[in-house]
Amino acid sequence: QVQLQESGPGLVRPSETLSLNCTVSGASLSGHYWSWIRQVPGKGLEWIGHMYYSGNANYRYNPYLERRVTISVDTSKNQFSLKLTSVTAADTAVYYCVLGSGRDWFDPWGQGTLVTVSS
Amino acid sequence: QSALTQPPSASGSPGQSVTISCTGTSSDVGGYDYVSWYQQYPGKAPKLILYEVTKRPSGVPDRFSGSKSGNTASLIVSGLQTEDEAVYYCCSYAGNNRVFGTGTKVTVL
Picture (tube, one colour):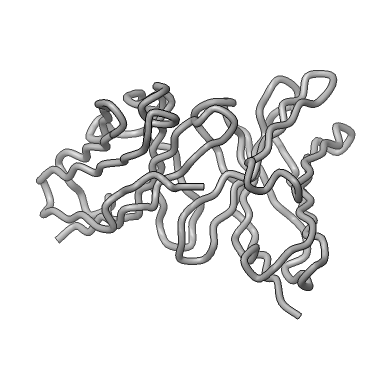
């Protein structure tokens, strides 16, 4: 079955760039939508964006985060990545990588990784 | 961005039913039949329990069902069991975005 695992620093300084990787097992990146979703501790969920890969990659980002977000792909490692620039404390959250349908469902989810923005 | 509106809490005794509403606008819930629901236990990742308003993934009990009317979608949990105590989130396609609900904590009394 498909499994996803997030990795990356758990602490990022304000104004710096948050970088996370998601390693996918059990499926090829090709032909699927791969998303990043975050959750502020104790709060709700927020879709960050997704990538669709089929030879080349197409991206869609949350309009409210678009100017700070980049999702990229490394097919040699079966990984996709998230970069979020100019972070503030408001970006402190658990970040999940998720397989999605494009328009509807998200399943399965990685276990999530907590990223804290603090000096 | 505006999250979809859910009641903060809902409760019921074992065997009873609870209904959780998810209210959006014509730009999200009302505009598309792409509403999904997720169950989340403390410290765990969300789990998909319904998609395309009414469809259940394999392995999800038929106690979980969904509906939609206008700008409001609903999750119905019938025959409540203790393991249903969790937080539930709705999610809707919104054109160039995906919007989640505020979350509802279900307590089994």
